[in-house]
Length: 322
Ligand code: PBG
Image 1 (cartoon, rainbow, N blue to C red):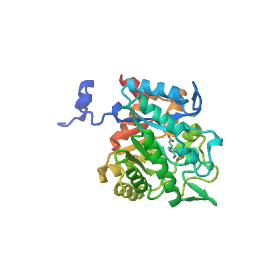
Image 2: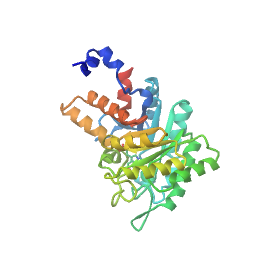
Image 3: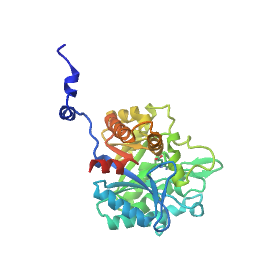
Image 4: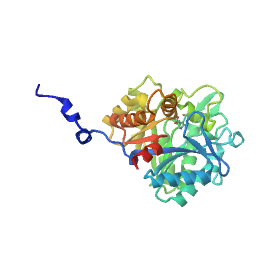
């Protein structure tokens, strides 16, 4: 035997030398949930270690992360039912929880990278990502709402707006609206291949944003489809997206791979709430080592082709790397 692959595995130094993929804190975006109130911190039952913070404590949390070298955050609001309506009007309220929080974060931590969520569901009394009329999700009418929302978020200081709604044509619509208002520098991270997934369950618990009727299958993609992701990616790229995202991550590594091969834009992957919950649950049962499983999963997502990973493990990972 002249060829013995085990030679390159014989010591930790050599293993690290030949390591093909590395994850670093710079690759990670930490999703965070904000709620109304003061000095409030409530754990999400289905996401051990993940909290919904009132704005003051959210700032403290971001400060801790910044000190660990974790500097990118995707912020999601959790609103009480009485702030929700059919048109998601709270989403453009400058004095409201979300936009106020975004401005406060940017005022406190200038070099934090803030990614805002553009979709109607946290503000919608129907719990859907678009305007609902007679049981249907209206596409073109929703674009107007999304564009206004994105501009309001840019005004509040968002570095990147991230449309997670899956309406057709939204990237171009949002790009034009941002440019018209002088926000040419605000980036768009498009949720390009967002699947109608069971893995969003814990997130909807955190936000109380589950759809009030039906499901999201008329706008989110069918888990059976890979080639359809190419159609979405071509559209998002031509409409001016700066990042293409695949969501969830682990059950869709092939889709991440496909987009990475065919497109030159940075590829983001969203390691979603259910993927986090699974590992935490198994760890709590003592069925596997949660830390190792986390590292292996993040590595796999990068190996598949992701440049950027949105993950609830971000702070835990940062703590381990410090
Ligand atoms: C909705 C949105 C969802 C997530 C991010 N933005 C859920 C949904 O489509 O219902 C899920 C993220 C997660 O599960 O971690 N606009």
